[in-house]
Every structure is written in structure tokens, then in C-alpha cells.
Length: 479
Image (cartoon, rainbow, N blue to C red):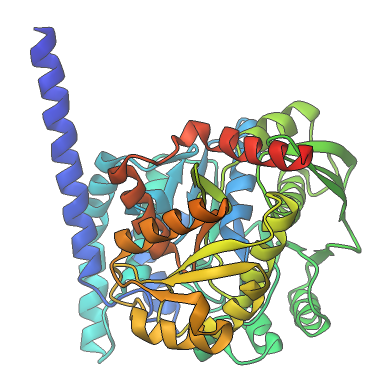
């Protein structure tokens, strides 16, 4: 009887997996994520037909150029440590689409994903029909996925949702929700073909998530970006809290297993908090998340307890961000897909890993600032193995190589379109030099490399990744 029960559970799990995959494929049949429509009404109509699930919970809404996903995950961990049931919407995913919708810190189950899609599909089709009758394109992948995520969270139900903007803010599908707290991570140039060619123009798009009755928490910004945020906050009559003025990351230092940060918050100073993430930028993300949660829980008037902070930070993760996935040689994944992110990566390689030179595995998507990324990383690159992910939007390796040669010179560039071969060539080269491999350029590349490492048998277990990073940091400190 016990064996029959196990077999039944296995079959049921397979059925749920197949149903979830079918739902994902139905979503993929829509216009892709880069098919951004400058509209919000289509998503608003879909959630209206569903009874406005986004109003079933409170919301922390996060936009910016870099650090959105990490800030969302850290805020989620702090909220869960406070005893709240949480939902998180982030994008893109590393390996499975379920990762984009988190419930209580775990990817949504196949069963809930498939059931949620079955629930919303008829309403998506109704909106599709209305759009097509009006001569417009039906709901895109991201529009439909946002509706699905909001419905799943409402059905869970969650107490609070942390929503990461897909692109921009004003026209982003997540903007059907009104954030109790609007969080703005550092704003820099990215997606310039859609958001604008200046920091000011991009800030204007991102400021669209600032709504009446919200509290706005912003990282330190360039003056032109901050001026836009201040104007928007004044327009809707809300409080704008800015890093360096209203709160601050006043100290941070490398520590075994991560870093110690001291944050001057809204209601208290939080001294020497251990954050198990690497990179100075992750310390800044943690400070921003802490203050956002402070603002959410008590409007900034109630200090967070030592236990909540300790438990919350201890549970914080950021997959694909300075993520150690291999050893002997060390292999690090980091989703630096623009110059701002690449600059942060370069700093972290020296400060947290003691690495002066690395072997780079690079694959990017079409439209990215390859030259800017490579110029930021050039001082630490021994050589780069240029490749491409399986994404249909991946820049062909030969085209990427031409741009890499222009920055690094032909003697530092190796072209290998087949990803597995590229990774193993980089590992062999790094091992010969006694160095490390850094994989970067796009999330799709990182996901493919994770899969390859697992199949090849050298993937560090998720529960041991922090230990691997700690060993490297400790070794470097002893040198």
C-alpha cells in the first residue's frame, strides 16, 4: 500500500508538471516580453474582469534600473520574518518560470500555476477579443503573466505582494496595483530604445509607480533623476525618502559569509547586521529593502526588532547575483547586463573575492550595451569566451565577438557558440591560471549555465553555495 501511495504521488506530480508546462507554452504563444505595449488599460481590463485581485493584498512596488530583484527578495525575507504571508513577482527566471511567482519564499507550485492559469484563461481570452475588435494586439506574454501572478497571490491568499516592475513603470503591467510603498532603486541608462535616451527621461517613466497615499523610498540618484522623482512626489502629495538624506547605509564591511552593514533607518539605527550576500551593491540593496519594510510596517515610526532583522537577512537570497555555483575552479554567475551592473560586478570581484583577473563567459541579448559592459569589466578580464544562450533573442556569438575584439583585442577573445563547450573551455583556462570563471551578460545565459553545471556534475549544491563563497573570502583575507 505504501508503494502504491508513493506511485500515486509521483504520477500526480508529473500531471501537475505537464499542466504547468502547457500553461507556460500557452503564455509563450503570445507576443514576447520585448513586445512592450505603451498601455496599461488592457491589463487593467483583465484584472477588472477578475474582480481586481491586486486589491486583495497590500503592495510594495519596486522599479529602477539595477537591483530590483535583489531588493524585492530581501524585502520579502524581512516581511516573512515579521510573520506576514508574502507573494513576490520578479522577472526573468533562471531555470523555471515558477521562480517568477514566489509564495512564502518558495516558487509557486506546478499545481497552483496550472490551476491559476485555468482560472484566468477565459478572462484573458475575453480581453483578447475586445482588443482585436478594436484593432489592437491581444495581451502580450508579460501582460497576461502579470494578471496570472496577481490572481495566484490573491487566491493563496497573501498579506502583502512585492512586485518588481518589468520595464519602466508608467505603462508597466504591474502598475495596475497601487503600492503602499514605492521603491526606486538606482536609475541608469538601460532599455533606451523604449524608455528614453537620458536618465531624466527614464526616471520619468519609472516615477509613474508613485501613487497618492504611497510612501516613496529611493536609493541615491543622479541629480536629474532625483529632480523628476521629487516633482512626481510633490504632484501626488506623497512623502519621498531618499538615501543619504532621510536614511543611509552608514557602514559596511566584508564578513565571513557575506557582509556586515549598519543602516541609519527611519526609526532607529541598525548596527552590524549580517547580510549573507556578496557585493557592496547588495549591501545598498539590503539597506533600501530594510527602509522600505520599515516604511511599510509602521510608516517609518516603528523600529524593526533585532530578531526580525536577523531572521530576515539570514533568509535573504539573490540567485544569479554573485552566485557561486562551482569550485576548483571557482565559477560565479552574475546578471550584469548593463554598464552600471558590470561596474558593480567588477568592484565586488576584488573586494569580496580578492580576484584581480578572471576568465569571462559572456552572452548577451540583442540590443544591450555590449561595449559599455566590456569597458567596465576590461580591467579584470584575462580573456573572454564569447557564446550565446538558447534564447531566440540571444546575440549571435560571432556578432558579440566582433564587439568584444574592439574593446579587448583579438588576443583576449575566444569564440565558442556552443554553450557547454564555452563553459568548459573557460573552466580549463581558469584552472590553468589558478583563477576563476565569471559568467555574465544575461539571465538566460545564467540559467543555461546552471543547467549545464548540473548535468556535468560540478554544480555546488544550493545549500552549500554560501559556504563556498565564504571559503573563498576567508582564503583571500588570509593571503
